[in-house]
Length: 279
Image (cartoon, rainbow, N blue to C red; front, side):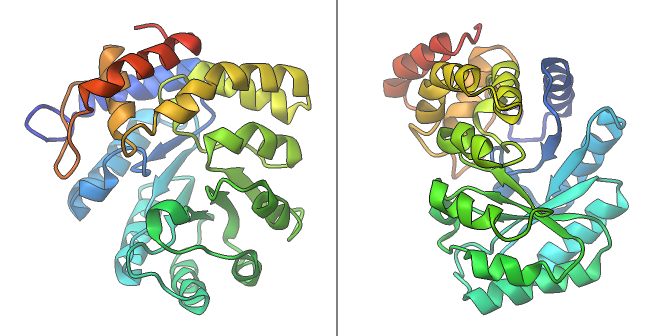
């Protein structure tokens, strides 16, 4: 965001180039580490369209198109697919706390409305509802539901999801447990920390995927401070502060989010230094 709260497309393009150069394997447009929750529908779709066009097939683009209204999530997903995204990421409906049956029907309606690949996204700490593995297994009846980003932060949950079907893609969505999750069988990590330290996060994930446990855990230890301190205030407040400290974005942020408290500057800077982030 610019200081006036408008979308800063020039800095978005700069971030995309930076990530691709750092080895980031895919870009998630309007994910939840950002301000997707404060974007109007037209803005949301505009960011997706600009991202697809600027990435220009250099890496896959995944669009965050979840919503707590099934009709809105269906609209966003259909429009994003028409723009040429490689997949969509659908968070469980937030605040209205649907039942397991409600979540099954919600995602089923969206899957029936589009042809492209869909990833479920479970983050109960932010949404107020937890999609259980049994519900995920039911949703495998839809051919285009191909995977899940699991952000509960529980390795036992990861094991349960990995046991459902060997062809079903499980990504970690929790940086603190991502290394161990990948060593268990996850295909990667949809990361908060990678927004600040993409090269090292990529190296950690690559090592874990290759089965190099020692190197993966060593890199993960260097990143541990960021895994923790990027949540000193609600995500994405600390991430946006760190990127501004690195000179990569402007200071803009939309209410109800506010700039990070000065009390957290020193610990976050220390975590950045520990991870080898230059600023």
